[in-house]
Image 1: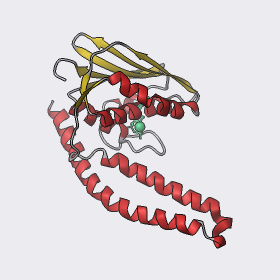
Image 2 (image 1 turned 60 degrees about the vertical axis):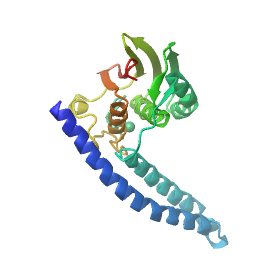
Image 3 (image 1 turned 30 degrees about the vertical axis):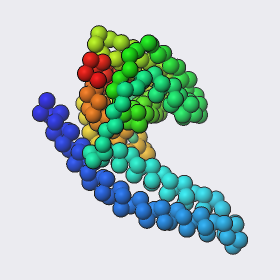
Image 4 (image 1 turned 45 degrees about the horizontal axis):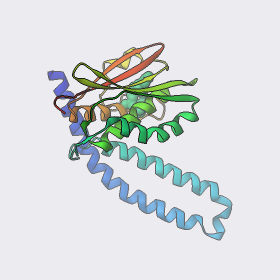
Length: 225
Ligand code: ADP
Ligand code: MG
């Protein structure tokens, strides 16, 4: 437990620092992006159109990394409302599917009749997206991504399963610590954000992983939430 709380302390520290730095970097990036768009339309740069597109895309990439950092910020207020988890999943389905299609991944929803929960809809969307992206990225040869909801005793469980490579054992006990990544362009922030979101919802995350795939379980207590 001590280890856990120091992990959250560390994450919160990273979060506060990140929020400050991210805000400071975002503004100049926005200015540069704006001028790139103006210049890119000029006659004399018409032969360099791809370069302008590339520069804008790179700025967008930087911005999305910053956005990930910002979601770790502790100052963010949680906005809990009673809502149906299944609806959030369904509304996110097209977005997840768009991600999945280019990776030859089929997305399957298996949603049970569950009671409503106290949730921050935006945070749950983020959690679903982060876990789904990891699942898709783990299936380098395609496969099936299954998102389930079901009741288990007093818990309502959300699970995201893939048929991917499994989580390498050398990082398994470090998961949730910021910046742990095995990907060339990974940020190592997706899971820390998920753990923080779960923590803020009084939910716990459990993992089942092996060479035939990985399942992330998120346990929401239906009695307290
Ligand atoms: P990132 O995706 O940017 O690398 P994350 O925090 O989302 O950062 O994930 C950290 C690491 O955990 C990943 O780099 C990967 O090695 C591992 N991981 C997470 N989810 C899965 C999964 N579903 N299957 C296999 N490995 C995973
Ligand atoms: Mg990720």
